[in-house]
Amino acid sequence: RFATLEPQPKDPIFALVDLYQKDENPNKINISVGAYRDENGKPYVLPVVKKAKQILLNDPNANHEYNPMTGVDSFCHNAAKVILGKDSPAIAEERVATIQTVAGTGALKIACEFLKQTKNTPIYISNPTWANHKAIIENTDLEWKEYSYWNQENRNLNIEGLLEDLNNAPDNSTILLHACAHNPTGTDPTREQWKRICEVIKKKNHFTFFDCAYQGFASGDLDNDAWAIRYFIEQGLELIVCQSFSKNMGLYSERAGYIHIVIKPSENASVIAKNVRSHLGGITRAILSNAPNFAVRVVDIILSDPELYKEWNENMKVMSGRIQKMRKMARDKFVELKTPGTWDHIQQQIGMFSYTGLTVKQVECLIEKFSIYMTKNGRMSVAGLNEKNVEYFVKSVDWVVRN
Ligand code: LMR
Image 1: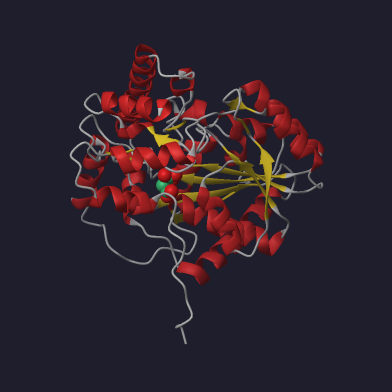
Image 2: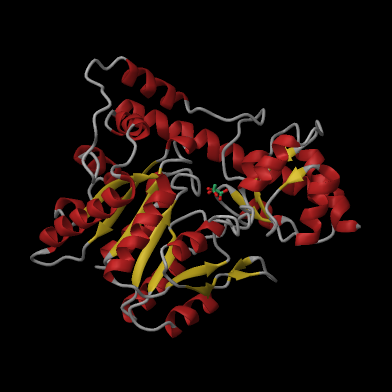
């Protein structure tokens, strides 16, 4: 019955992690997957997460009962405050439908199912975007189309192309936007540019679908990084936000996330939000029954204690600060070596990634000759660099660029 199946194409990100693990070169570097590494290149368990796990362990009431299909109400409420703001009028007016999900990917999948059932129009994604966006959309039997995002020549945002494409999309299209720390380019719109994007979306009656996987990594500040989302809501737009705690709490494998669907203000907005939430719960039930609970309990312990919340923000600053330091060290080293080309973008880009501008051939050479694993589109996860390997990385890139 299954004899005709061919193997699936390799995942452009996780296949590299596999290759890296098998590589015996002592100088190997993994800058493929977007996962934070400490200054020794080791996975980082946030100190605040360690504390929260201990609190959970000592909780005599903790158990492993089923959750409601939509998740625990108080957890949903606390998570909404992180992304929409603690004084968000949308939360106060009870016009936000929030459910727990299996981290960011799970949120995107349930959101796509919801859009398929309610809207069923193509989803516009940035060119380029995170590879899994296309896979999730296709897997839901929805269509994706692209809008311009990247100006390869100047290594910056192609804002005019982006606006033109959103303008030319049929009215009432769905537009998937990265809320901050765009993956893979590390390049976000400025606030002025966000305002222009919002204006077109409003004019065209498009529907906004925010993916927010890196809150805290763009600027080191949670509120700053949620600015675009909050601005769009302020403008009266209805939208979806997919929220992940994988990166900003370092809970990658534990799968903590949420969907928030914000309903525009109206007399019956809170009733609509309730119905939307129940719909999201129904979709969840049919796909996975209910979302896992361990990680969101850890997240919620942190979110509900002011001291731990503060410590979380400090831990995040450690991560984003070290990434920024690595950006500067790499850029300075390129300048010192007089590597052909310009390298300022490595320092200017934000979040976890840098879109280096290296070609597929150059990346293949980095992998084969130097055991430096980065995605074929030239994206590097800057978090994989540290003071011990940055020189080897820059020298290797220098060699590849010159040869
Ligand atoms: C990445 O882009 O590397 C991360 O978001 C990990 C993933 O799931 O692809």
